[in-house]
Length: 244
Image (cartoon, rainbow, N blue to C red):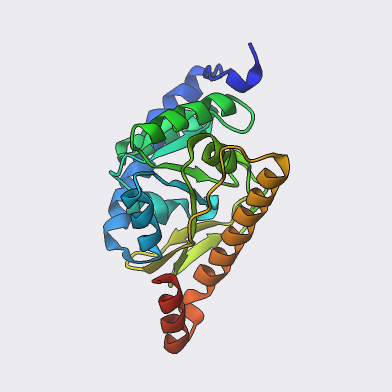
């Protein structure tokens, strides 16, 4: 079988299998305790609303670093995310499904193409899809091509965004510089205008769209990460730009 379509779960020792539900329950409980304390502001949501009003769905893309504040904000919306079949992906799948997400099994190395095919079907069924675009293992802040491929196949646009918090801890020794918001932190989500990929896009245009996605991911990351260090007048200027 072609490895790109191999979504069989890897063989794990019984001790590792036993850990999966325990880790999932602990992480889910932690998110459910932290999440209700966070205070969100979303800039650029009108971009998502316009896509939905046009009859299409969104392909969300964001950096793995901000997955905790993202999954709480986006819970119970039925968004379908690409999920690896490795050990981490098995307990992660339980957590995100308990939070009201759908999953498509695959990764950049195992089942990736089949995962994209599942996501394309879900878009047709009226579900949004999402990617932690540099996951599951990096390199950090290097966007993978999945959303561009899915956008060409489905006709649905890519919506990139990033999250900033006023208080939290960055775990600099992790590959993604994982961000853990502090309880009662203020959170800003900044979403760029949608990126459309024509269904007849050739290799050059696909490369150009991928570069555009990478550039927009970096742009909203830089703004969101600096958000709470900006003056109020500068934040108002940025709000005016992203609320157009």
